[in-house]
Image 1 (cartoon, rainbow, N blue to C red):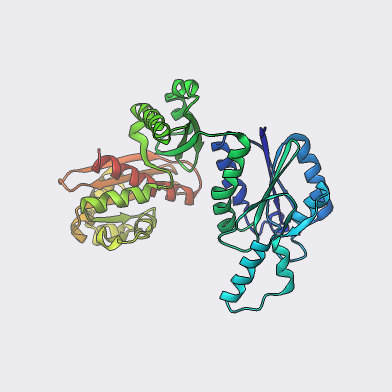
Image 2: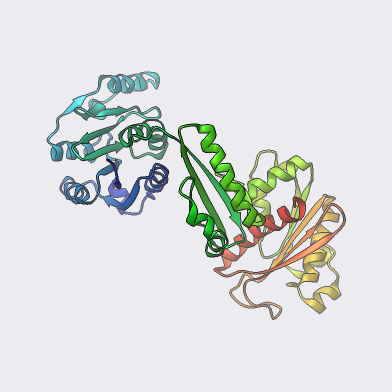
Length: 414
């Protein structure tokens, strides 16, 4: 019975910092959904003796060993050769994989070198995991109490291979007949500790679905995972749990799964047929850069003014000179006039403004991290939100842009 897993990434480029180990992150999430504990991530270079040592150690503490990388055609691709030696297994030619490799070279009108046949070698007795986006197949083998799974290194090959074939293999070994359904809820403007406190009793009583919190950059996600023989019932359990959670902390919820706070805001504004403009001081255009990254941005974003100096605030946006002299550039009054000014100047339904102190020093006697965000609404009302943010100069600027999205969502789509 599979209980604990260890993910072993093979590749000197990982140790040298040339690439990030995103495969381990992906696999850990996938295994968590299956109820398999991942207690160790290991990275080892392209060295057979060190890989043997890693395998020996891993077998003592885990009974599912998942290897990523080292299945290619070159001499430093040594994962399956090393595992074959440790398990005293032969490598045999998988004719279907070899045929796929030959077809690939034929279609691309390239000559296949002899060493590419190496990619079609697999552990004798293993189940083949078809590579639909590359050449080297993956494989899985259960020997005694241990299961070994070998996956290619490129994420574009590994992720679909595991999702379709590797997951099915493990479900069969687990004897799981239930459908597994997962949904991610995304929150902004609340810390992980506060969110957990607010729903602590819900988390404590949940067994199916399970609730797994995860903190990000001023964002918190909750992964809800349910199991049931009926996928409809699994979805019902997820929906019921989601409702219970949102009844407590729904004011901070903004989206699901791969949503970003920018994509959710953009979609809602687009569907409402509003137009938006921004006046950006401390953010320097970050907000408009994010919002113009989506297809159809010209339907939503009319333009932006980067008003970094007082002269631009006054002469372009129409902020009153006495406002700047009396209250300063970093103030509620200036943020309000900036939002109204850009909305009027660019003739949009909504105007948003950002002014504040990103650092490193204070400004207008305001401490670093003080931010004012003005929102000029379609109904003629204008609100200003003050927040205090911690972090680096760059971090404060990026978080300010996200808070702009947060306040727009609250003001426009309550």
